Length: 232
Length: 145
Image (cartoon, rainbow over all chains, first blue to last red; front, side):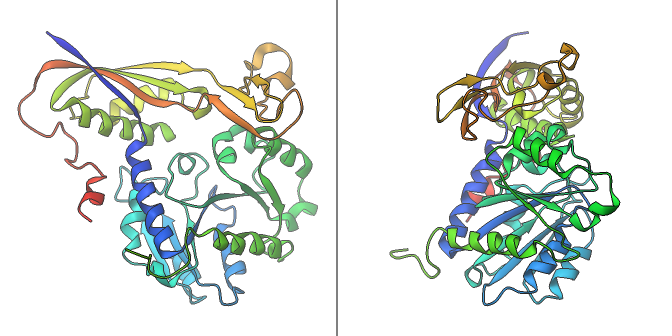
């Protein structure tokens, strides 16, 4: 039994990173900024998007909707007359629990990137795997809600550390809960002191305007001005 | 639970490098910031490698400790929690803000690794085949465009 050592020296997620970089180049060419929106199931991603996209002025926004199964969320957002493409991940190994760069790439054919200023990717509800897989986004944001427990940043630091903005949702429930928002904010600061933290209630609408400003502000980060690339 | 996603990525990468030769050992460096549980990774690697040339291979995981450096004062520290039984509950909590100057901006010097360092393979290839992968490097999609 003869054995040979093969030097690999490759990050296990290199294949994903390569595709994410290609996505990034396509987004830049089309002048689209991309936000990767993540949270645990039920934290309120879709409802917050409904709220925010209901008033979008002349900003051209599209949504990629990631779910293991079904198109319930995509149907809700389509009602707002934004282009929505559904990605179902259940063809993966037992149903992939996250979107990776290749899944996003395969969905791009169904979206006219050139007609968009901002693309919001609503990831599969999960606080673990989505943090690992880049998709070519400009910004990662997560939502945690006050029904989830103050200790979540300590339990899922990878997710909290990967995001530049952390939204604390469902603040309208605070009077009914034994929940310490200050402790949650302190725990976010422990694992990601550079994160911006916004408190809001998608249900009551309180604080939503600040999130809308942040989200629509990301559109200004698009790589190049819309239109064909000179010399291309 | 991300150990399954990571294991699948490891198996695909290893198959690409093994070129049809049976894999005996995969030498992996994992940073403590990746929150990978070695036992769980071991289990899922066994699942993800079934019916591939990686089946039965040993996963040799070397844990790499975390190290941060403050961009303001240059202090270096380990942000990962001490073992919970140290007696001091504060010490068991992670700390990514600089313990010296309290600044927020810091770079990760070590601990983010998820590196397949090397693999030990049989010198002779097994019967012709694609190694049991789905036959595709996901990046092939890029080349065809």
